[in-house]
Amino acid sequence: AATEARPGDVWDRRWRVTGPEPGRRIAALGPAGLLQCPGWRATGLPQAVLEGSPAVWDGAALIAAPVAGKPAGWHAAPLFGARDLAARFAAH
Image (cartoon, rainbow, N blue to C red; front, side):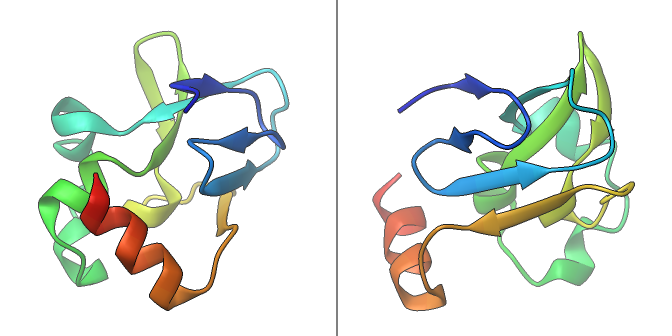
C-alpha cells in the first residue's frame, strides 16, 4: 500500500481524501499527529485505528485529520463498507 498520496488519489488502498488544497500530502496520522487532535476520543475509534488513518500534511505540519475529528474542510471517504473497513483495520 502507498504510504503517501495526493488529494483525490486512493491512499492505503482504503481511503480517498479530498479537500480544498490539492497540493497537500496524505499520509498516516501517527502518534504525533494524534496529539494535535484534542477531540479524537469523541470519534469512538481506538487510538491505534486513528493513528493509522489518513491525515493531510504540509511538510511536518498537520493540516487536517478528518477521521480523527479535525476535518478542517477535508473529507476521508472509505472505499469499502463499514464492516469491510473494520476488518481491514483489524488486519493492520
